[in-house]
Image (cartoon, rainbow, N blue to C red; front, side, top):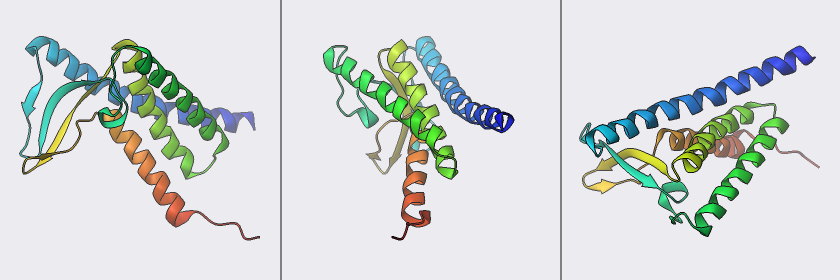
Length: 163
């Protein structure tokens, strides 16, 4: 029994570390490129640019604030949410656990940046005929995929209990 628990824990840890590592690697590259070039504003395709901005708010720059009380409150709230996600991972033993692990890896990547840089580096700029989506990063991609899959799973694959 403990061997199965250890194997499950190890696989879960590998998933979270892999997501965190991919996020860290991309951010490390962009931040270092910014230090060398003094900025990052690269045309990649007609729909994708790499443009570094520092996000002090939450998702998509909402609630952007300085390094004051609001920033610290948001950071503590994110830390609490990460603990809640950890609890949800522990309580789930189905496909939802995998989606939560993706969210956890991305959340830890962005939380790390908030603690180290006091802001999250966002650099993926998608656009279409002059309309730009919010600038985001790889952690945001994993978080969004995890949330989207949780919603789809809940809407279409959740078996309702009959009373």
